[in-house]
Image (cartoon, rainbow, N blue to C red; front, side, top):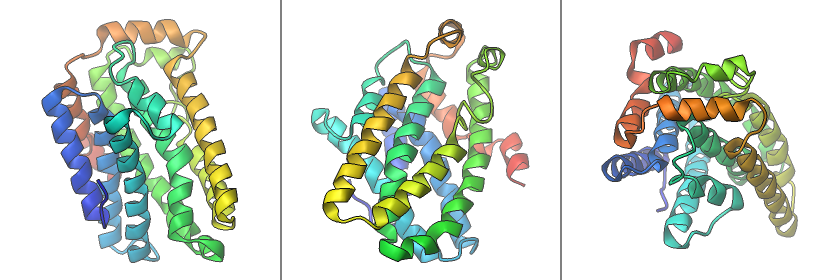
Length: 261
């Protein structure tokens, strides 16, 4: 699918979430998280929080279409960017826990798609005018991430084990490196915005390869994280439709409202 504005992104993600709940498809995990981020961005646009709301609508639309293109390519013939193939390829892997599915989607969308969408929205020197609004999204992401962290904790009673092995802090799990990744995405957006077509193709290829490597590390971590994940896997909910529903309502819960107040 290809959408024309941020309303289309929200509707498209809602459709994926609905179909995923019906089919018991884990693709709904990240789609639910992403839908909530997009709803919050749309609300911020309507409230005039961005310097240029119309530009932010275009930015979010380019960003959303990157996800839809990857999703459609995977559904069609298992093609698409490497990092998204790594992500979607684990949807049927029963050994991958909820938080890993979320991290895989976050990794691909931020470490590849975000810079591409920003550079397309504001090519050339115009990219520098986007910086303030680009960084403002960090606050929105932080609010949604905190709410989803609580939601995942409800579904994975032993998720706190990752704290004990140093693998679950605000910088490592869900918000694992969102701030750092977005800083790198901004650097890459500036780079892409000033490149010619051949240079852009090479840069996007490099970003895709790096994000695919990170996806493999998220999927198969080493050290003490691995046994902790095995215990989490045995104790967290395996009711996929119920998990999707729970994640999709994270921002509606009282704790989320208090966080965003």
